[in-house]
Image (cartoon, rainbow, N blue to C red):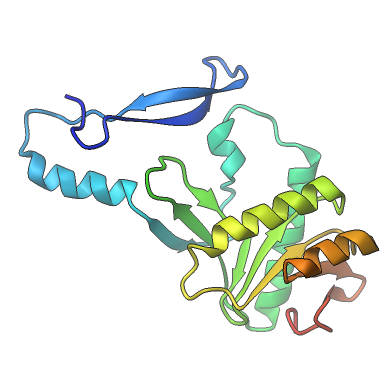
Length: 197
């Protein structure tokens, strides 16, 4: 039978056979052959706010949940390489690094941050390009993820393949977001190396 409190919700999913992404209605069904009381607790927990640390090695991405049959784009591969390189750099300096798996209230699909440095309290979103669209997306993603991180991040940062041009650095600074980028010696950042030492 339909759940009495929240019988349905909307989300995005690809068409059958790997077609384009579309809006769908998901109906929440409950079995009628068991005592609903324990089930209510479990389902409410599943639909409530859930946040957990997961390893960066995991190849989970939000896009995989939206379009599971889509071939990865080159930018996504660049992002993953950047994240793994930064993870290894920070671990070599004894930083504790994870990523967040977030299930917002009322959502069925999890969100995944790229990297959270628990040692410095830095929440990092990686982008495979330093162009405006990628940076604007990173700003929005950081604003979304930071609401769920506990304790709250001390610093927000975007990991890019190269430093952005002046106008985009100003945009990030206006949102109090730092930049991290690879160098021939490892990494650098807009805090004179404070995030990557």
